[in-house]
Structures are given as C-alpha cells and as structure tokens.
Length: 360
Image 1 (cartoon, helix red, strand yellow):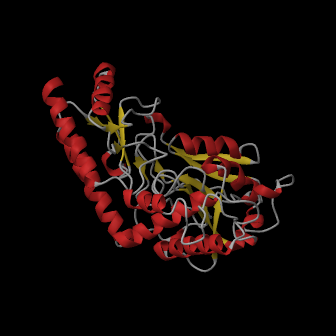
Image 2 (cartoon, rainbow, N blue to C red):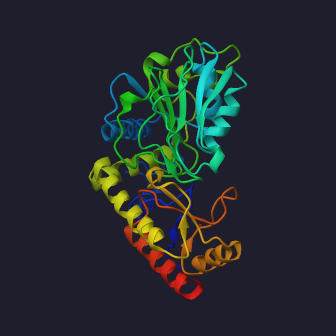
C-alpha cells in the first residue's frame, strides 16, 4: 500500500518532501559519515542544525530579540507544571478553559497556587470560544492562560483575550505555524511539535526573556527551570536531537511554501472545502459554532453512532486514515495540518458525498 491520507490529530502527517530528505540523509548526514540520530549533540554538525532551526523559526514568526526560543522535552503536558513553577510569583493565575488540555493545565496549576477559572465553554461540550473581551482578571494574577486551538473540539481563538495588561501564556500545539502570529502579544507561546511541525518528543517554548529568572517556586527541579535551558541554548542535557533536526527541515519547507501568510491562505482554502460541504450536507454536521471553527481540526458527526462507526471503517478502507473522533466528542475528526495536501481534503469530501448518497 502506498501512502495514505493521514488525518491523525498527532503524531500527524509530515511533508513528504521532508521525509524523503531525511531518508536520503539517514546513513550519512552531509558527509559526516553518520546519521543525525547517532551524532553528539555537542558536535559542530549538530550545533549547526539547532542554530539554523532556531534562526528559521525566528524568521518565520518574526520573533523579537528579547524572546528566547527553547527546544525542550516532556511535551505540552510537562509545560502545565513548568509554567506555574516558573511564573506563579504571586501564586495566582487565571485560566480560560476551552477544552481538555486547558482543563488539564488548570488542574495542574492548582498544585502550585490559586488558579482561577475565569471563563469556560464546558457548558456546551467546548463547542465554542467564550467572549473574552471583558474578563474578571485577578488584580494579582501572574498570567492569563489559554489553549489557542483545541485539537479535540475543533475550536480556535480568532481574537486573543483581553488580559487587561497581564501576561498571556498560550499553548499553540495544534495551530503552531499555521498562520502568522504577533509574538509580542504573548509572554509565552509554546507547543508540542507532533501536530504541525515534527515528530513527537519536542516541545518548543518561545518566552519573553524577562520572565526567565532564578526566582522560581521552591523545590522546582533544575530540569524544570526555564533558565537552565535558556542559558544553555537548549543543550543543558542531551536534547531530542533527531526531532529538532526534522523540525528544522519543516521550518525550511514552510519558508519554501512562502512563509506563514502563504500557509494561512492554503490552510483556509483546505478548511473551506470541508466546512462548505458540512454546511450543505444533510447527513454530516460540524459540531463547532461557525465563528470559532479551527482550520486545523474539524470534528463532525452523522447523529448516529452506528453510521459514524461505518464511516470510520469504510474511510479507512479507502485510504483515509485516523478519522475517528476523540472519545469525548464521538463521531469523526479530520485534522488537516500544514502538511495535509489539498488533494487529501478533496478526496475526503468526495468520499463523504458518496457515503451520504449511499446512507443519507
């Protein structure tokens, strides 16, 4: 069987061009006689790889000089603890809970101080983004936290919350590099790379450097202090070297597509094909309020658990993989990240039309 169209939410599809390049360099990276998997993270070759990856990411997002870029491990879930350990100076933080990952981050923060849930969309199964224009921001909050794109529920903040001058911390795991972003609006932007950028095992943290200090909560392990990694250029210990190498290739691939403005245009076109079909379909329905729809993750249902299961089984047989929805929503979900080709979305919609004709 050839390559399938992989709609997985993460680990997710990577650009074929990147995979082929990595395959060609697998045994001998640029005349070193070894694979990047085997080389010392202290070597000149790897220093070049991580340095270039950081510079390309800085170029793509126009990251200002007063922000540090760190390539870390432990995934987004470890950040749920690292953020309060390092940033909760007053032991107070405000959380906007719009999905499972924001909810987990909020629960984790409660271990370190007073976490306030200042807005939530849990009342309607996280199917919308609450109005965040005038929130009850705590006067002594150290930061306001959001998960910008909700992978499971398919919602996205189209407007960042009004934090009333407080630092904004955002988990962007599933919308990372899908469109331009103004880094100066964030104190911290971070995300696991396994959705839109690379293989599982790397989390990228972009943080304003005045927040990176030794003033952390007592008992914070050395490895969980941002300063440890920022000071060592992400090389305090052995980093996820091969993962960083692949991320670097993806950054170059995005540049080649025309950067983030071009990515946004392509992503919006792909999403429109799918959403337009859902809006006209008599069998399939999207589950998210229109104005809050993600262009990366698209959940939909038929209204019948039996038909949903049939759809998932038949789509798999047709080479459309990983369309089963998250267990908390049911139904289906198509994750259409940067590397999902337009042809994949077109094939999915053609398959859905055919399925509807036979089962509608």
